[in-house]
Image 1 (cartoon, one colour):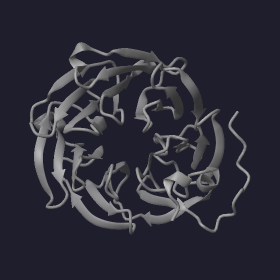
Image 2: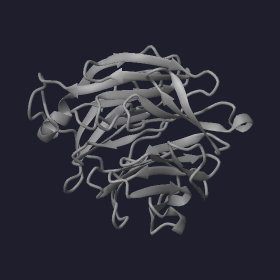
Image 3: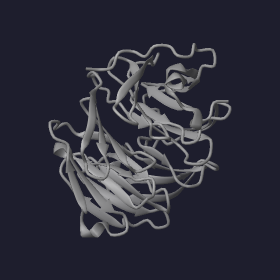
Image 4: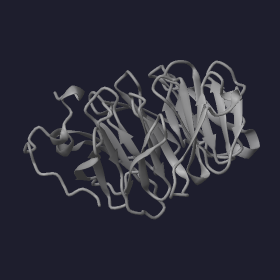
Length: 331
């Protein structure tokens, strides 16, 4: 079995669909891998949260949430527990976030405060804190152990949030290409740094830190992907991934931080090496259309891609011809 330490251009080019799950009753809204366990979770428009064993590529459990729906989802530190954002009844009960046990299908806690859809959700890698960004133009800080909101930031436009891999910093991207960095222990003092991504006024729909904390990956609602220096905010490179009607894309780092993969409006999954000068190494037919959800597994040579109501798991094809030529790089 190929290990992450063996990841190379040839391995990236050899990635192919190893499993397909197409029994969803609606669009897949989000997915997440657990940081240490070999499990994956999805949330979709059929109000389901689905739990997968990625070692055997098997669906383990499906739970339905008809009263609240299932929009954004992320694992807590426990591999059987997730945080899930609601789609329904946000104004009437304010139960915008729920702490769910997938083991016995129980809601362990409700988190009230947001008055519109949560569009970004991230769990701290080091403690029980998490952050959420909502269309109500606010970012809220929470603790799994208490119901009450721990802090709130009022911002312009649609905010997108992410913790760095050490849990020391969280980033908030907002309208106009502004990215604010906060110390997670003293966010009430305001951002300690602010970056401006010039030339693109589209809203940011996703932001990620690389595992080494040196880079940030931004995806915008008009399908542009930017690689930034996380220390100084300098734009290393940008890719236009073709527009797609009514569908946004997601991009992801490989765990070693050497590659970036992204969905695209052309229905392919594109990959670049970013260790030195960015260089395109692969263009893979997604087979499912525009990949709106895309994540690489933390400890495996595997990524998950979802488009509309189909989930795919990708693994290396051992029969692929080594040294196959790379597609031409983007201009």
